[in-house]
Length: 543
Image (cartoon, rainbow, N blue to C red):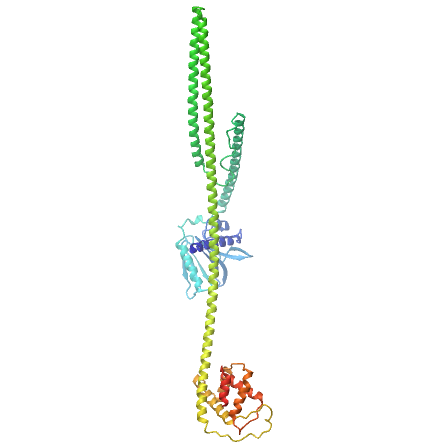
């Protein structure tokens, strides 16, 4: 479902892109084909064409220069346009036609040029070759693939004379089209007038029916179709309904005709009997006047009989009239029911159209949501990769610090054990400039021994890391600058550390050192080795 929606959206976008380009194309632009015909913008719009691919390419001229060209690959041709004053015109390069038919079109790569391709048109009007370049090799390959697919799916070759029409044929066709348009408008006006006349006739028939005494017979003064609906009326359904109604009317007329003929026969028989009675009366008058009373009686009897028959005939006629009215009412009800059914079908069709529109909107919104999720996923993946790289860097840094710490502890312990018996305390420094508050006694031998051990351990570390030709002092400076870690020391631990150093220094060799010098030594020591436990290592250093 999503793939089908994407395909429809892609086709719609390409149609909109083609219409946008055609709207920006100059109306008077044209190009001359190899067969001598002139190809115009109207010829491009006359045939239904689909945009397959488009993009900016570079057309190489005979002098070796490149011109920026907008290439449009359609279903049956390849078109080159050039932008001029914010309008598109047919490209004019080396007097070559900018419209290339896909029939007998060959695409080849340019030797030693990964971004160029040759377009060879093997038309019967005259072969032509174009050299076109793109921005990259991938774009060149994409263009070649699209052109080859379009050439394979191109329709059968037509006569090249039909590709574009001459000016005379075009003027004749335009004049013919304008005359046809005028005739269509005239026919449409005449149809509307005929429909209005027919509605007037229906209205007149309804008024005549009301004046004739048929008030209970309702005649709708409107046609079943609308002349300005824009759709072709379905005459077949109307004709079928008229045939059905005609069958009912024919049946009613036949019944009425039979009744009328029966009435005519009855009247004829009555006239015959009347003539016979007249003859009998005349004979009776001739034979004698004595029978006059009897003849009068017979005439009266015949008169009463005729009056009874006339009353029966009038009753039958009234009955037939009622049947005819009932048939008309039933016919009108059936017409109204069919009209209601037609309106219901139209409403259902409109509902289905609205539902389809809603589903299309939902699919469009779901497609936009999926695109947003894809962008968010790509951004999250990029951030995850950056975080993973940072974690790897931190991990390598921690490993290096652990390695340095291990070497320092190992070398320090070995240096302390090896040099503890070789150094003795020589005396107390007699300088009086260092006396003052916050002073403590420092074991010079231990300090000297620890610093020499540090020089040896740092030199071994530098040798292990692959740095040659540097002395121990330079190695200390380089390692100190690389592994500085600024840690804040808790000021509450400073008195305790001072007491421990005081106890470990001994009573004979004490140096009066300011308190800020003690703190600076501790910070330098902690900064040099980058330890996470600076107080403990400082205490070990001064023991």
